[in-house]
Amino acid sequence: MTLIAAIGQSQVMDAREAGMQAIYQALNSLGTVTPSLCILIVPHRYDPVQVINGAASMLSNVPTLGFSVSSGLTQNGVHSHSVIVALLAGDSLLAETHWFPTYSQSSAETATRITQLLGYEQNPVKQVLVFADGLNANTEEFCGNLRAGLPVLGGLSSGDLMSTTTFQIAGMQSGSGALAAAFLRGNFKLGMGFGHGWYPVGSDFRVTRSRGFWLRTLDGKPASDTYARLFGQESRTWATAPLNSMCRIYPLGFEQNFSDQLLIRAPIRVEADGSLRMNSNLLEGSNAYLMVGSPADCEKAAIQAARDALNDLGDAKPVLALVLVDTAWQMLLQAQPERVINAIQEVLGIDVPIAGGFTLGQILPSDSKITHPRFMNQHIVVALFSEPKTK
Image (cartoon, rainbow, N blue to C red):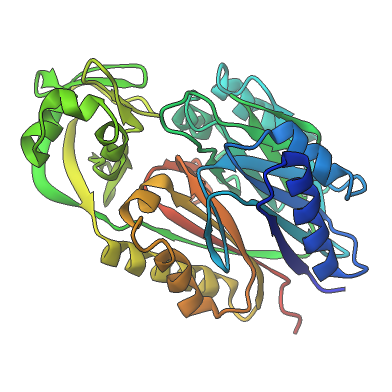
């Protein structure tokens, strides 16, 4: 049997029923084939326990991985009130899920534990897929403590930017502050592409005070003063809705050693005291460039990411596109949300199933055997699953 995939979705209000309906729809598309992996993409408004119970009632011990989103994505567009299911099946595809409930308190230890688990396995893992807390964990620390060269890919769960919780799912377990991982083995191929549509506008600042995930001051003044000066409105207005979350579309770019690309770090919201709530630590004394994005540049980035992923597959044909997009894109493209999917389908065509959602960050594999996986903000990631083409 070749590698195949199916998508299901449901927008009924009852969480358990939504999980059941989405799984039922996907299973109908698979026919008599037993799935090897289930990916659950759940709007943050739903109770994950009920969604899992509904899904489990339709599945028989199928490894399940999932995460919360502000909105989900399929080949039919953007869905803010739909539970989305992606099923992957193949005779040689093997998946096992792992649950790390203390990830937000011990990101480095979680990375070490994953490395240890991989070391115990005799059958090599081909890909590690992770979905992690997007608000309260040190993902940079996590990536830096993973094994160099590890083929890990994933996203940070999202939801209501004014809240402090997201949720993750592994098997029958769910909760906030956690990391859910799936170890994938077998005869499959993964092609990947990524990019973003943001660029520096010339204004640069020095990070003069930063504590944990809070950027307190830029050039010695409250961070909100910088946004007020550049974009208008009073500083205190930036600390109230809706502007306090719109800061996400105006990230900061930092120069990197040995790279001409800026490292993007995006705020989650502006706090009442004018500081920026980030989901990464920023180094005091570092110089930052203000960055802005445009729908046209995001569209180009999505097209290029899909092309790069397709080229990465070579002659193999994709059966599923996992698409992880930063929440900033959702804000920027609010008037035309379909542009992301349309751009990807311009490259892949309309027949490739798509599943994904908007995230608070993306985790990319190492770009060499001697570097660590990378934590990104503001990116789109297109990951194409395929069966390797036989000669």
